[in-house]
Length: 416
Image (cartoon, rainbow, N blue to C red):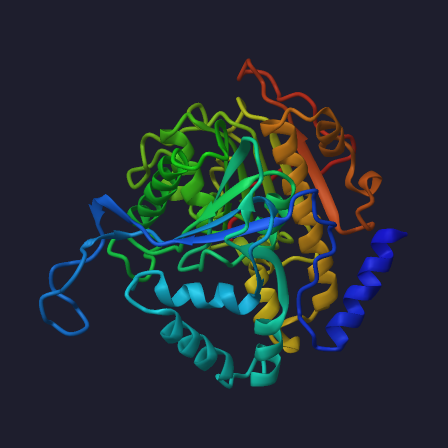
């Protein structure tokens, strides 16, 4: 009943245009701290010597800019934030020379833009909405597991800030950086682009060594869309990564990069990516939609016989709905079969499953394992919202994987 009441409050908030997103999951025991770190990866150069926009020699630092967003369990204090603070990080992702006044001006200009989706007043309401995080709050004592968040292609590091805050409140340190290609520009959805983002993940793991709060023995990577392909590449190279979360990740949509073909990253095999996987999928496409457009002859997920795989379909969700920034700034006309309130509810359930999965595999929580093993409706998920397919790792690749959830649908490879 409590969750239903929260949903009704969410709908009321949506109708009042206060914000298009509502936090339905209760926060954990920790206040959420936030820091914005402007740093470089000096082992890589992102920018060409000649600026292709001006044709002139480039001035300044050529190393790869790695602006890093950090959410962490806090002990209190810090400065309260609104969503506008996250929006402002987009303007310093490559240019660290911008001052606070310049960032505020660019953020205000972005908010005032007119568009077919939202009016300036609606955009302002989103920007003004408070968030859980407090800038530069005092870190909580202790060591906490690390989660690297990898955004979708060209995605901002804050595209799922609410999920990152939720995890931090529950005792996780979360790091994220923006998605750009190997040249620091628009992400090219090719193998080179995926490997550039995988290298960003590796850099963030290296940076985490400098954070006293982080337990480097407990690391997971969560990725949305393209980030859900990059994290697979990262896990194939880095055995410190103990678990993967994929928010409708492109390991299905771009199987040519991981299926052993001529264009594939040869080091990426199911045997090397032998860590637990949580895959949260959008509603499936029909055979007619897939035919002629997608290669479904190979499924990396089906081949992960040495991994525990939790595959859930969230039927209200389209692919883009896994990004809360998309939910916030889409117009009402973008929600047709399912309402925005239903999408918000489904996204909150997705966040809950991410938490339970991480608790199970990074914290060894037996109750979370029981939660994952139960059918979604037994966990309080509304009927018809989620479908589960759970496969426990098989030590013998010649026999079927054990532990399939009773009544679950058979997992089929799907592209996006």
